[in-house]
Every structure is written in structure tokens, then in C-alpha cells.
Image (cartoon, rainbow, N blue to C red; front, top):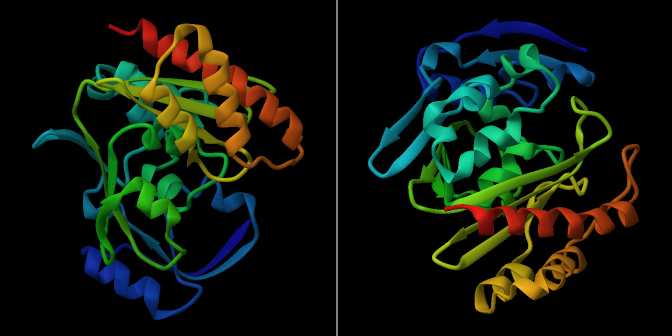
Length: 264
């Protein structure tokens, strides 16, 4: 549960940014789905509803997703379903329930770098960039490496190309948070393997991706999968141990590679 002293709906992004940096406990709120699970005292709650950041559009060779777009809109978007083997839509369709997905926003999930985020893992496997009000535009990979600082995520850009991808996940139940999630993609025999809910935030298995790109052998899929599990770090929480996550990583990576190989 959280408490709010003041609630504002700025008319410009500049106004929103100036408000959140004015005081330490001023915070942007989206659907507040995850915010309400914790305990926080918010000075000024900033709602971006008036900034028209709720969109999914095809623009200049990229699919642009506004920060205020909900997971339900991502799940049902024909533009996203028709690209990358539907990996983005597939990554969010099992999150809790429809009512929940109707309030969770892209901006909150991406900017907060949630370790359990299904969306981040899928986006990282594609050619994805983010645009921040203050820091500007950069690759998602670079953004995930940056230390936290107050800013506003405006948009996510996914380069439109022929990259094929697969999203795999492991849950205790269909609507639970993931124990582990994996995305694998390929474009012109250049592969990417990403793993999230480790329970740390999504990361790319670079050695395994390079090995798969340099010499793809159907007989050695387990080798690439095991390489990904070996190079990444895993932790334990109430959903699973580090050892279990590491073991399941190899299984999910192999499954994802096989699905991508079947894409046409």
C-alpha cells in the first residue's frame, strides 16, 4: 500500500519531469499494479495520462510503443502479433489476468527494470531502443546497464526486420510470476539469447549467442543451452533456487532455439 500527498496530471513531459525531480519522494505512477504491493510514501504522484503516450504504431522502419501503453494492448496488437513470431505479445499474455494487464504499462515495467519482467526479456532479444526525456535515445541493452536516475521513459522502438524469435517461461501456475523466462531470436544467422527472472533483471547470454551465431549445429543445441546457463548468474527466492533456475535455463533455451529454427 502507498500513500499520496498530492496528485497531478501534467500537460507536458517537461512539466512532468520538473515535478519528479523537484523532490526525492515525487514519483510517476502508471497503473500502480506493482507499486501498491509495497509500502511507500509519495509526495507528489505524477500521472502521465494526458501526455498521449498510449500508442503502438508503425513508423519509419520501427514499431513504436508509447510508455503509457498497457500490456493488454500489447497482447492484442495485430502489428506486434504479425512481427517477430509474435514474441512480444506472447511474453505478456500469461501475466496474472486480463484485468491486471489492462492497467500495467510498458513504461513502468521497462523503466523499473523489474527482475521478474517477461516483457524486458523479449524486448532484449530484439533490436530494441528506448527514448528517455533527459538521457535521450539508446539501446535497451545500454539502458539496462545504466545506474538508476530520475527520468521519464517516452517510447520503446523495435526495429522492423525479419528477426524471428521465441519466448519461453516457467511458472508454478499459469497466472503466477515467472520462475524463469527466456527469449531467443535470429536474424541472418545472428542469434541472441536472453534470460530473465533469474531473479535478477533480463540479461543477454553473450558467449552462448556468439557460439550459436558462429557455428550452428542442430546436434549441439544442448551445448549452446548449457553454455547460456553457465555464463549467467542465478539467485534463489520463494519461487525457486539458483540451482533449479540454472538447470531449467538450459531446457528453456534449447526449446526456444528449436522453435526459432522452425520459423519461416
